[in-house]
Image 1: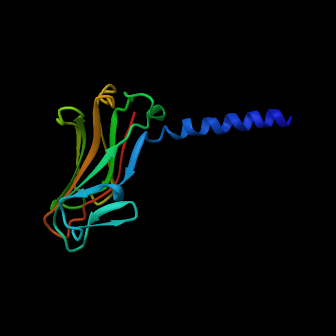
Image 2 (image 1 turned 90 degrees about the vertical axis):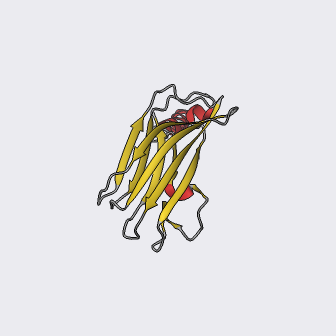
Image 3 (image 1 turned 120 degrees about the horizontal axis):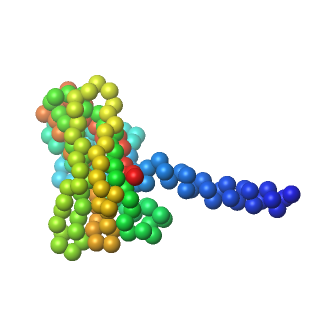
Length: 167
């Protein structure tokens, strides 16, 4: 009886990682992005969110390196098809742009795969863009998500909460 129970528990624990990976194959919270070429007093992190400081306007660009998590990273061509972003854009005085970008490892050529542009809304937005399941090729390219928060007035509330790639 003990042996059967042990086998059953082992099978259950082995199945959990496979099922857990179906939510998003790759994801980051907004606060983990690498922000470049802007003073540290322009932006702040609040929990998972990257946003402007209350007194700042302009542009904040954050980049999120995509690592190959598909099949424990053993496949160089994951079948991912969807970029997902959760963000806030509550004003016509600002915007949020999320781009999935491919970088050729040898030529350093960048190619934008898909783009999400925000629309003004009082509520949290969760938007997607799709692309071919044969897009990713980690053997020859690197990938990242670039998020641009822009605002011309401190009354605009542009924020990035999460970015993800999934199939």
